[in-house]
Length: 88
Image (cartoon, rainbow, N blue to C red; front, side):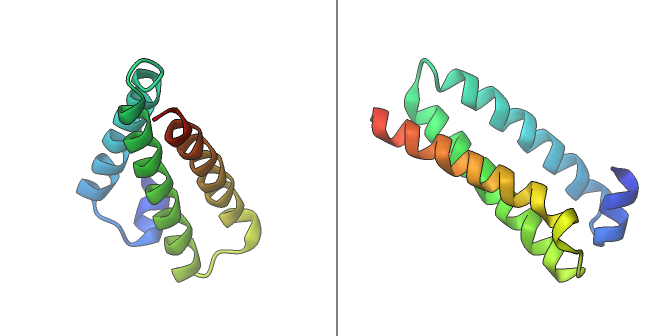
């Protein structure tokens, strides 16, 4: 992943921040099973990250095969977001 972040033109800080936010988001999704607003915010944050990932892939002109995982995870987190929203 270090080489991928370099290829994206992102800094070491951005790489570490991305990983930290992903871990916090995953923790928030699990916590959301007990406190739905935390799950909602976590799913929204992860969906926003995946949208950003897709936009970075488009900016560096990656093909569909390289961009597809970010779209898949964007859709998955959006679906989870809708589920938490329905619980509120």
